[in-house]
Amino acid sequence: MAHAIRLATAALALTAALAATAHAQTSVESGLAFYRPAKVGAVEVTPFNLVSDTRCADPDLCLTNDSVVISVFMDSDRGPQAMNLRLGQPRRVPGGFLMLTNTGVAPSANGAISIENYRIELVFIPDRSGPEGS
Picture: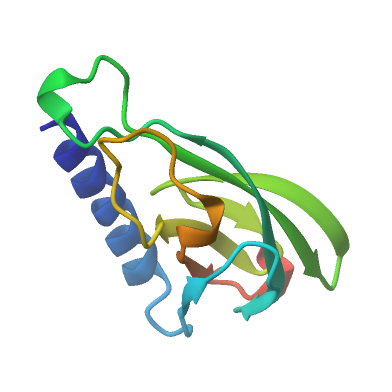
């Protein structure tokens, strides 16, 4: 139940951001593997670390909050930068916002998930005022 509420909140945040930037082009990159660079909107991103994945296969048995955090190396017109992205939480980057929206893998009842199984989805939401507005 808590997981569904968090996802709904993230969806509302994304919807609000998209509505605010209706004239700008949102970019979605799906199926990204760790250590593989990809252009997402105005930035090039390389996921390089799974910081944590506390999602639980059976929410009724879990005592922790559902959360996924990955580290990415981002390169933009402002230079390289490493940052963490939390599932469903937009992060300001040059030219807009970057958000981790999907991991491509379900929580496992058997414990750890191999990093090779993740297929990340990132969304770039342009800033209303363009690259200068970030």
